[in-house]
Each structure stands twice: as C-alpha cells, then as structure tokens.
Length: 119
Length: 107
Image (cartoon, rainbow over all chains, first blue to last red):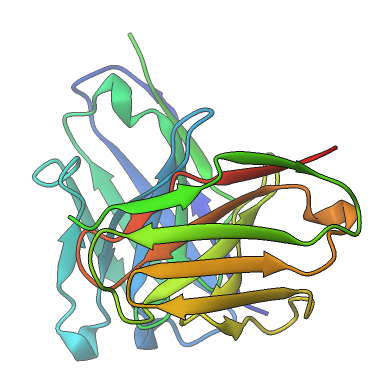
C-alpha cells in the first residue's frame, strides 16, 4: 500500500527556517518525482514545487511565491523527500502536503502537516 | 502562467442530481489535466487524470472530458459522500496551477 507521511510542521516566527519531511513506503521511491502542495487556512490548493527522479536529472521546479526561499531535496536511500523553507513569511502559513508523480501527477497524497508562521 | 478558471465557485444540489463543473485554461494544455476531490480536513483525492481517465477505485458516476482549453467534470448521480470541494489541476507547464475550487453542497 502506497503511503506518504509528512512531518516537521510547527509554529515558527517570521524570518526563521523549517524543514519538512515526507516519508514514503509501498512503492519504489527512486522511480517517482515528488511534489509539495500547500493549502492556506480556508483557501484553495497551491502547487509549491517538485523534484524529478534522479534518472531524470533530479532537478527541481518551484512556484514563484517560494522560489529562492524554499528548496526540495530527496534521499532515495531513505525514501524521504524534504522541503527546506527559509525566510518564512506569515503568508506561508498552510497545511503542506506531499504527493507523487510527474506525467499524471498527484495520484497519492500524504495527510499533510501544518506550518504556522507567526510572531 | 496558465490560469485555470473553474466554475461555478459553489453549487447546491440534491442526491441523485447530475452535476457539471467546468475548468477553462488560459492557453491550450492538451489533456494535461486532473480532477481532485477534497473533503473537509482531508487530503485531496484524485478522481480523473489525463482529462478523461478514471482513477482506479473511483465510482463510474464520475467522468471527465475535454482537451485544449475547456474541461468538464461530471457527476452523473450525486451521492451523499460526493459533497465536497473539487479542484482541477493543469500540469502542462510551470507553474502547475489549480482552479479555485468548486464547493458542492447539499440542497
């Protein structure tokens, strides 16, 4: 059974950093691109970015709202994808979901982890 | 960026009704579109991929159609568990973008 489990969400002050993890199981992690999607309270879904599988270069793409502040990485030996979030802003407050895929993406989702940016 | 205009923003319907939700892309995206259902407090769930392919395990009352710039999600006979918010997503070009969502409520 495919499972994605996010962790690392917390309450942080503006300007600080936080790293989220997405631990995968039930599939061959190295064969999939991994994505992050977020949802601010009471709002819609926003794609944050993704990392390709290493066989496709392992490169990343980001939404303009996070480019230069957030970075996605992966550890295929541990089946974990990371979202490093720097220079956090209050508008980054959201539930962050990890989800997989590239060609026909987002077939499986984690349950989400809440990040609150507030002083 | 490609804008996805989803309509309506909300609708009220009864069990058994036929429901149609539309997404329009600001430029052609071939069939690089998926539909997702989200119940309150839950993660989204994929219903349709490649514009018209039904996700395994999803009831056949859900169907998708369209290509290019205009896409439709249809629920042929609304069931109680279908009351939720629905989103389209284009993954043709970066940044990938979602529609604003359609909240389906009980009449």
